[in-house]
Image (tube, rainbow, N blue to C red; front, side):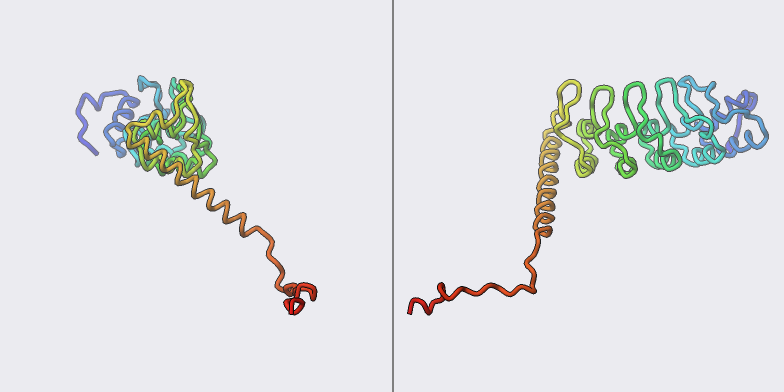
Amino acid sequence: METVTMAEFWLPAPQRFYQAIIDNDIQLLKWLVDNKKIEDICNREVDDNGWSSLMLAARYDRREICEYLLELGHEEETISTDAMGNTVPMISAKYCHEDICLIYLERYPQTMSNVNRDGSSAINWAAQNGLNRVISWILDHGGNVNQRDIEGNTPLHHASSWNQYQTVALLLERDAQPSLKNHKGYTAIEYAYSASMDKHIRETALRIQLKKQKKQAGSFSTSLPRASSDIPPSTPSKAMSPDRFK
């Protein structure tokens, strides 16, 4: 356990619990819990944002603490949200903590499409920050690749404007629509961070389109009925025989 000053020692237990998360001091957390010094592990009253302990741990990338709090049943009664409607997946994706986001989503998949007051969701933040494993998980579990925020921006808008090349390719592969416009009338291409990103979106979208067309054409040709090998080929009639002209 880290050295604790006398001033910190005399802090009320909720403040000590809060500070232990920031300091990544899991031993102190366990001591406070095991000795019943903390009544409510969510501990919302201490944080100015109204964040629960788990949200705070997600913000500071305290993976071990997040897993510990989840094992204690942190989310069993109420899913953590703050005054703005942010959830743990949103916070962890916003601050680029991909592993924590995935750990939480595995336990509480119903939160993957939740939106805050700005209409933002975990997939929007993941697209902005290039968290492709989070995006893939969400889409594999039925998430909307074109989910919009309050301004009408899709994940592709976010990835394009933040110069996330691999994320743009992933979203297009998963059927993101580059022609969709936000509420200001702009597409993801028009929101491209650079001319290079503009070109990347156009070329990737075209490549995927051609690939799908080729696949559909191949599927169509293999679905055509074949002539039965049991039927012999027809022979020309006597009237059409070359002997007729001799």
